[in-house]
Image 1 (tube, one colour):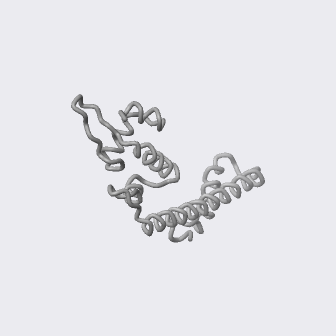
Image 2 (cartoon, rainbow, N blue to C red):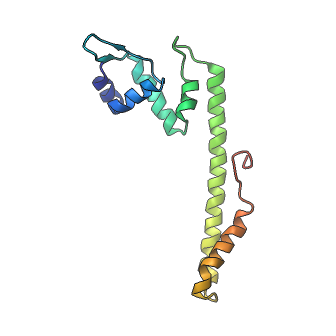
Image 3 (spheres, rainbow, N blue to C red):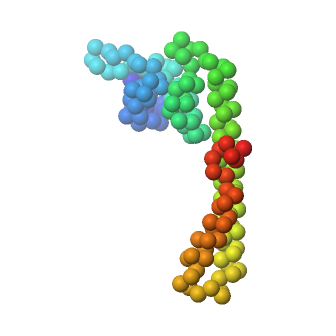
Length: 146
């Protein structure tokens, strides 16, 4: 199928499809005598896998290592390990986000309850000090937040 048909079936722009091709994520296609690219039918599901993986937070490099080989074989162990690793990363991110949310809610509550006695000119410094005091225990990276 030509790139226009592939774009229509996948909902992707032709330029994005060409980018994925140039990046080695979809197999290099044959060019016909007229110069048009001819994509195999598998390109539809490969592009679906790529876009869904990107939506799930995988980088293009991570996706490249998880896709089936040109011989259409999946590296099951690597795929499973990559998927499990991404779940672990997402869980760590969720912990950091929950911590950040908790810290912000504490600051909001503190501001709502305790700023009447502080002069306006001192309030930004007071708020910053309050936030910094709470950040001392914040998880810094995914290894610390596991």
